[in-house]
Amino acid sequence: MRRRKTRPRPPVGRPYLTVVAGGKVSAPLVKERRALTDDFLEKLLAFPRYTTFQFFDTETNGLQCRVGRHRATWMLYHDDRRHQRRRITTKRLGFFPAMRTAEARDEALIERGKIAAGDNGPGKKEAIKVDVSVTEYIARLERNAAKKGKAALWAKNVRSIVNKHIKPQWGSWTLADLATHPGAVSDWHRDVTDKSGPVVANQACKVLRAAYKRSARRDVSLPQRDPCSDVEYNPEKRSQNALDYPDYPKWRKAWEKIESPTRRAYQMIGLLSGCRPGELAKLKWTDVLPHKRCFVIRAAKADNDVHVPMSAAIARAFKLARDAGIESEWVFPARAEGHIAKFDVDGLPAWGMMYRRGWRTIAADLGVDELIAHFCLGHIPHGISRGYVNKMILSSGSAMRSAQRRVSRRIVQLLG
Image 1 (cartoon, rainbow, N blue to C red):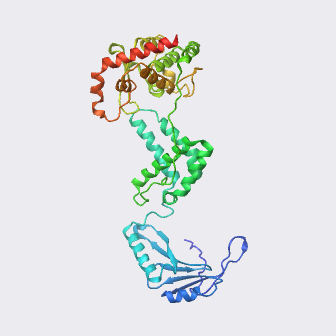
Image 2: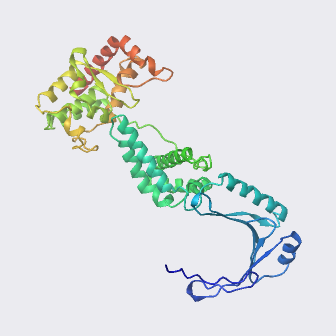
Image 3: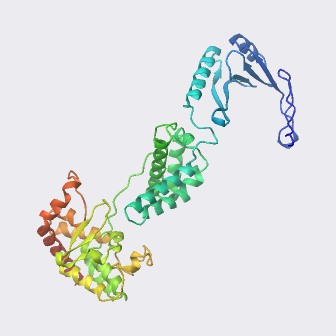
């Protein structure tokens, strides 16, 4: 077995020259072991220095004082070889003369106690980086979506934000460094606001905060704080885009030009019911219940099943999809299986969530009770426990069907 060649170490207390990049010779480094005192360090600092001194204190194991041209720094060096692994800890304790020798020795003993107890936190090689943290957070979002039987759409959006805004800036940072630099995070938030808009900047900060909090629950050595504590979030407003009353005839003319009957049925049911487009796209024929005059949205946004009343106009739209003769468990198979992109609007002047806002506007215009309107849209109003939602829906079923009929009748009138 060949022995590894090692460079000869210079004797302690003797200066030696260090060769740096480019072949230049740096100032000599003097290493010495001695019992450090305040008087010795004050006399050393009183004279100009053209070299660097590194003193190893013989009174406290691991305590060092590095005296350069401009300042004297207290350092702790500890080589831990327990559990068949080597772990070197180097930590700056303070500066002389602000921290006197006795204070430095006390601080060194405290840090050595933390190391012995295992509370000193991970080293640089073991510290979790932001890149790893956000990747684990995205995996968690995908697992949660799989448990609920939903498509991991939010995980997909988060991955896009991470790849575009978080990883280029913070990917190589450790979480501990991120938590101790809230000002840098605030500056980054303003930069993202200028480049990509206020909403994207807020979402990027919320993703970064959520990933950090999840990692902090797994690693108790991380600072228990919010890395985005200094961020001034941009004000956000709800979108007001909806189909205006004079535009309903335009929507009908564009709708009649759609060739696919299932796509026509999808758009019409969305307009008449106000369902969320992603939830409506995953509707199965087994959840369409004509005998109960409703259809069921499974595992909606609030993790509940939403029973949507079925008016006569909605029933005709379902018949249009059924008569298409496509053999599939899905009512709208092309959208459920992802063959139609999310932004495909079929040439209509309104689509998606604009239907939901339009339904709510018409319901308010007709004087529909606000609580009934919430239940028709699948909302859980504030102050009502989820455990009582199903009972309340069953008790107000006739009122919900009546409200749905009134809204559908008004939409049909607007369509001309």
